[in-house]
Length: 247
Image 1 (tube, helix red, strand yellow):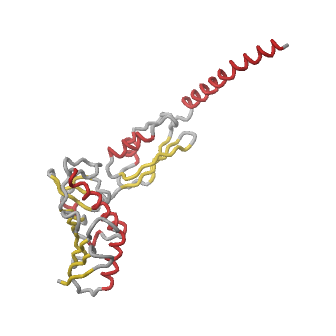
Image 2 (tube, rainbow, N blue to C red; image 1 turned 135 degrees about the vertical axis):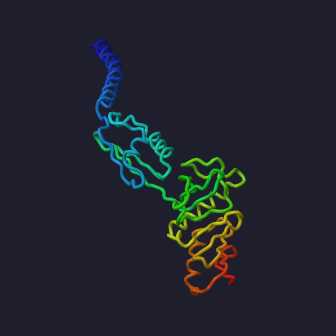
Image 3 (cartoon, one colour; image 1 turned 30 degrees about the vertical axis):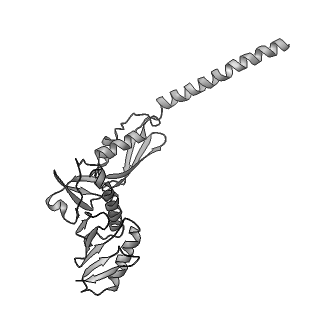
């Protein structure tokens, strides 16, 4: 009897991992046979068609829902469609994918050796721009992209790279506060004190790259307290207040 129990335990010890492997193989086989992509939906797109986004992702009908490399698909979308700012790919069982995108919009333009480029608030190069494309875009001075490519963040060289992060912080505030129509240029030549025009009446000096959100709030408060005919330089670089020097 003890010998019989021993043999049973040995068989159990052998069958347990074998059973586990069989179950795993069955699951993998089931996933490879079933859960094939039969529908792909796109949400949030305006500039690009759903077909363009699906094609850029590289995902095709018939691909396995669980074996798709979503990170690679998103990377392909970013590289081929520069106006896509964010992308998420969600599975919708049993056989559908949903690609949700958020698109960039041009807010400014910067000059390079090969022409003028539209950029978004993150300083991403979107496309070359000329003529009507430049209408309403803020002109950036003092920053020149090197070997610009669509979909890439401005690369001005190591010495100039702090200008990119500062410019992005400025453009982000302009975009968030919907001030684009009030500003025609930004001069980022001096990284310690960039400036821009405001309402065609003021030159605004920002000082160092710190407390940018607060400085923009100071700007709006100061202008609201001034008369319509006031003109001059609003200096936000001295302390936590806006200082006006009249023209």
